[in-house]
Image (tube, rainbow, N blue to C red; front, side):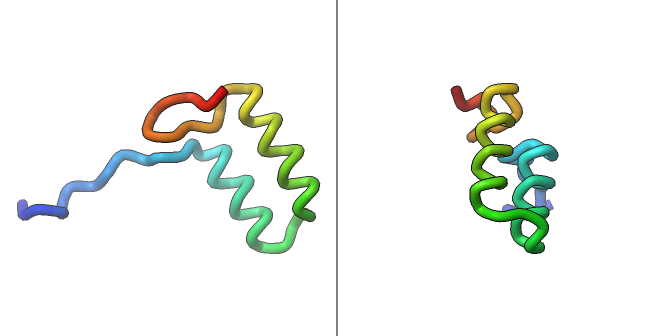
Length: 54
C-alpha cells in the first residue's frame, strides 16, 4: 500500500450527505435546505472532523 491508497474516514454523516444530494438535485429550495440543515444540527447529526457541531 502506497501513500494515499488508504480510504479516509467520512467527514460528514449519511444524513447530511442525503440532504445535500436532495438539494443539489433540485428537490428542495434553499430555505427548505436551511431549515432541514438546522434540524440536523439540533439532532447532532452534522459533524466536522468527527466532532458534532453545536
